[in-house]
Amino acid sequence: MSRARASEELLDGLHRALVLADDRIRVTLVPERGGDVHAVHDLRTGVDVLWKTPWGLQVRAGHGSPAGSAEAWLDSYAGGWQVLLPSGGGPSSHRGVDHPYHGEACSVPWAATVATDAGGGELVELSVHLAGSPLLLERTVSLVPGRGEVVLGERVTNEGDRRVEYMWVHHPAFGPPLVAPGARIRTSASTILADTALDGPGNPLEPGTSHPWPMVGTRDGRQLDLSLVPDASRGRLLLGYLSGFDEGVASIENDALDLACTLSWQLDTFPYAWLWQELGATAGAPWFGRAYTMAIEPATSFPATGLGGVASTTATHRTLEAGATAATELRLRLAAIGPSPVSPPREIELVDEIPLTVTCKVQRSEVRRRERERGLAGETVR
Image 1 (cartoon, rainbow, N blue to C red):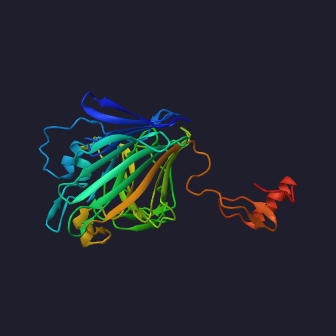
Image 2 (image 1 turned 30 degrees about the horizontal axis):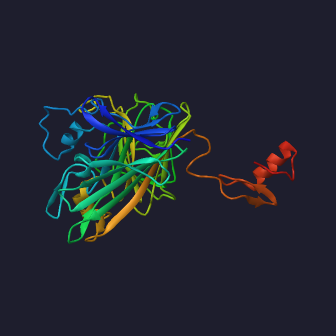
Image 3 (image 1 turned 120 degrees about the vertical axis):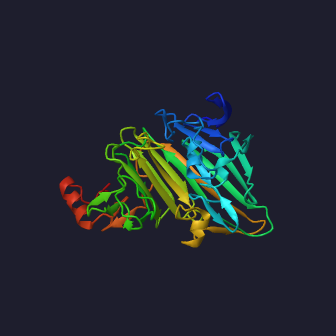
């Protein structure tokens, strides 16, 4: 079991990257591009679980997109994992401030240094002072020895003299080969609410409708398991908001790779998760059918209309008093599928004095049936 070590690389000959790696996982950070987590490699399978846009780190030039627009953001979007703060979605205006699409934090350079933890492993510390808000965002990126797990610890501090309203969203986009036909999403969410505005090609949900997760009623009257990833030939562009979590955990599992990618977060900070799927649906710009990705995005707020839109509708934004700090932690673990990471086994229970380790509700009649079949009455059933 090796300790984490940091190194520096130059991506595409232009972009300084910091790489944090041990013998299980390799994480690539690009501080100059909004502190992006650009890649997360599982060293057992060789898979990078984060999606990359067709143009990657190269900025698409010559489009003349208005500053702060979604088009301008996409011109420089390389895929990977961003933090959206103090606004997400949009663009929007709020209390006299114009917030660009997906907020300022993911569009400006961050400072980054390498430090050493108490166990002798290395970690990366990043920070940025926002210009459009009096907010300081600090992040520590570290690895958990022997677990194939990266930890993002974040702190937001209001350096101003009055309260600040904000949204806080994490935007990890996952892609092939992890995201593939037949891969599945596991989460304890109970509900998905379809976005009211985005109604893209192949969207199975009527905009603004709420459904139990994962079996949803489609607009043509069918039942659809939304946790299963379809193939690109069907095409799907969907944006929805997951809620009603028992715990802040969501996994993408791919049996063919024997790989589970599990994202976990603190529900008191992020009670919602945006689900964005662009699965070969958009034939025109900017994807031209080349996008096959989905993002599971822990969020303080919804919908994806920017801070101004949220404040005027759901009011799920947060407030940070002058001088106050909000802190949270997210983890991404890569592992062989094994038992479900979302619903770990509970303590041993007794059914008619037969000890039983369970991961789901087991009916007494089922226990009896298994006893008769095995002829093992009185012995442990597993």
